[in-house]
Image (cartoon, rainbow, N blue to C red; front, side):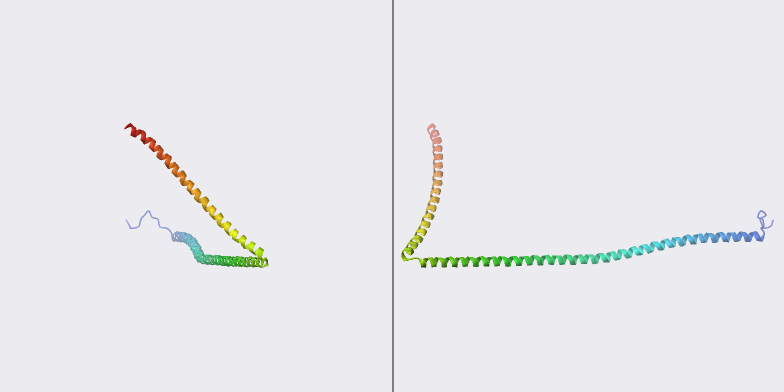
Length: 191
């Protein structure tokens, strides 16, 4: 027996070439399909990477803008605080000046009224004759004496009210002592 398998038929050269060509075409087709799939996958991955890069750029831009906006917001807050403080200080200054001016005007008006009253009084006294001057002086003395008597009368009323209060307290104490004595006397006589 020879080394060749009898069951394996020998094929003619043309069929072997055709099989080889079909096998090559099938391999080319498989590789082309795999290459196309890989290219699609590569394209998808590249698109994903591009999207991620864009997203990253947007995030970086957002962070930069956020920091800028926070800085601007802090500047606006500081400016608003300073403006409010200046407004308060300005209002306080105006109010203080107004109050000082009001006091000055009131003081000036009071002084002028007092001067006018004094001048009018002095002129009125100068225009009186001697008898009228005497009556006027007597009226002034009587007015002062009346004021003194009224004050003393008020003081006496207060003293009387205090004394009446003390009398009432003493009366109440005396009545209470008499009641206690009455209660003790019968108990003492029973012993």
